Image (tube, rainbow over all chains, first blue to last red; front, side):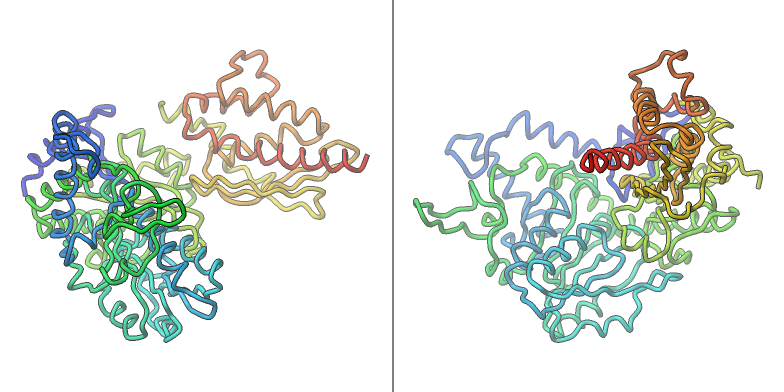
Length: 409
Length: 150
């Protein structure tokens, strides 16, 4: 993997801040776009733009071919059985809302249980809170070991025959922990629950295989994997999707509409009301192709190297506290941390003055922060275009934060 | 913006100043202020006597800008009438939004003038006004209550 060639593909990484190019370590929030993605969007809009599945003219047909063709690329990418199982949404959040509303609200009843992890992103938490409130189902949590960030396995006993939904992230966006979700998925299935896997932080960084994972729903976002904003994916097992209510209503999701009744289109159109984001689909196709050409094995190895270097360096800086495990072998490409006495917002401001972009706040995981007894945190997250030199620079600057805030040690 | 123009010595000093970071016993008003984007979360407590802010203090957590700003506000507004306090809250907000830039006019804000540069840093505006906004909400609720009584 040739990093300097990869970096050449990302125009934004050439942005100068002060005396050097910016250091972009906020990939958990959104990633940058390579030229092949930017060019694919330009190419589509320059030659093929039309409204897919409507009209009979050449551009409408071209747009349909591009849009439907992109589904096949996504299907292969996650190894789904059929493109009927690939639904385009705006992002992971919308994908999870779709499952919660179209499956959760119609299939759950009073007395049923929903079990989720305390570390969930609000998109996979508030959604289930709402389902619980509307249906009378009980929402229960799998907690984590505050030191290691791992699930407390005794809590798995909360998954019982009454449990209808088990929802959790393959990689937590705060803890960044690397774990095998398959035993938990098997356990949930053994109790008859369906499993909703949030893949927002996993799909961009590792290969994911729906047949191997055997989860029932899987959600991820294009913009966290080099595609444009506004395109996300919901994978669902066909038999479950068939048995679900439509999400939004309107154009392209219908079969026959009369004054009082409507029949709905086949999958996946049933869940895609309105003119879809064709250029988003185009960008996702281009991004998947780009990442697959580099290879996920290479990406995993590269991120592992950066995480190891960063964690080892951070452990040597006084007052820096890593959240969750500080064992690099157990961490994916993101590290949440705090610096004693300094609010994360100030840490980020100081690093930003040196051209370093990190995330601060609660990372849309307030219950996790409350559980950990912290107000907010900083997060550095890496991607294929980050370098060891950038990590070194980040570590150097991290050492200066306390002094910048008037602390002498 | 240069960091030393943001984190001036005065701001760093107020950030660490614990004089008014405390609990008040039996406060007349208590109001929580929360900045969801970065997790700043403060509770402001106010003691009122005949329309005058007799004592004011805060607890909670937040970034240096929010903490320093709240500490400056308390120092400036304790002892003033509710009406006067609200007037200065509005003046402070106008300064942060860049609507009032005249130094003479801003003199009244005393130490809080140190936060003037925030007007060039939109991402920190919410941090700077958190304490002030929380006070405004608390005082306006109180005024409404009094109006209802009268």
